[in-house]
Length: 111
Length: 394
Ligand code: SF4
Ligand code: SF4
Image 1 (spheres, protein in one colour):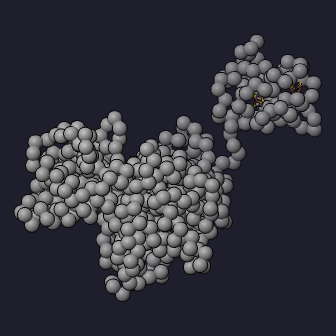
Image 2 (cartoon, protein in one colour; image 1 turned 45 degrees about the vertical axis):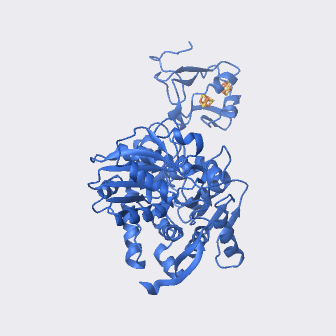
Image 3 (cartoon, helix red, strand yellow; image 1 turned 120 degrees about the horizontal axis):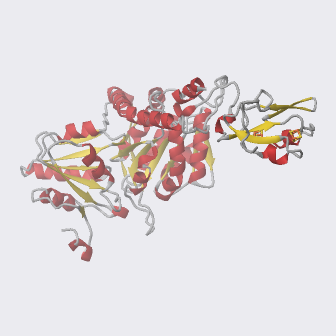
């Protein structure tokens, strides 16, 4: 990330060229909380996937797969629209598995 | 050198500037008319209509739009120029900051005019001073010849890889824009050759398209901004180099500073713009009477040539700085800059003159030189006020 930033600021006006940044990392904007999921509650309705403004919710063949934290801005929309309460926002430091499931040693902010 | 000249023509500053634009052949000129800039763009439009230049002339709905279109065109990869004055420049200022931040090397002709209110169409430097901190290079011409020469020099300053910033070439409203005088034009090919092709490192269009105008978070904005500030500082040396190249080729040297009869001067005036002509006459006259007076004219205002100015002032004892703009609530811009950067021993005094096109006569300049023989006045003096207000100044 630091090298991408360096590349951009070295050019006049912060110009960015193709290849400078492999993919945008809007996840850098998150301020404190991120979504987690309890897969035992998830019914694969994909409301979270449709509503996420940053294409951070991942799905494959109609099955919920988790979150891309490089893209997730922590806006909490997914946790609002989830009809089963499967998505809970947790503190940024909470350890999660790649799908967003809270690892045993982690603690939920919203309990 | 004379062989490069097309010959001397009688032209106004506005017409001479339009000729420079025609000879530079910009790709795009987005513009909106406003007095006293209109003669520039009116003359240039005629050149376009008559097929004398193949520029795309964009007639837009405001100066804000003109400057916005200019930023797009310049970053897309086309040489871009525009012209404005007064309220039009004020309306452009938001986008001039953006042009500087995005490092768009747009050359702008300015017919310097007072700002409203009261509404007034005549010359002063209030509009230019509004753009002072925009990050653009700012140059002022004394007369039509300088307006022409500086316009031909401007693209090389703007487009230099170490600079890449907008350049404002100012000429005083009416006293230069509308006053006809002898102007020696260069040949079209000479101008073309001097200016060279338009090249910017990362054009929006072309083989390697770029993303311009991106959001910069607190972790990057500061660095990008400081580099922009340093680019403007670098423009001082670039301007000197371009002025030298212009002099070598065409025989006219327009440095950052014009020091007039300063060799052994004890008293001096510093000013910007067309009043220099009047002041030079007064200096000549006083010199004939044995008075050791001189004049320093600033052509380059941003970046501010602190060292060149200090060198020009040399061993002078008292200096009157004449500003054709006020900075209400503090000292006027030119005085404030000189006071901030000058560490010589001369005593500096602040004068404001010529607001809203108020004529500055030789007697006014003589009066300043006379006052420089008397003890310091402190504060700011307002030169050329009439009636009741006059008493407030002394
Ligand atoms: S918190 Fe917002 S950005 Fe992140 S996954 Fe949920 S909806 Fe998308
Ligand atoms: S909204 Fe809730 S239940 Fe529906 S797919 Fe997303 S996490 Fe699963």
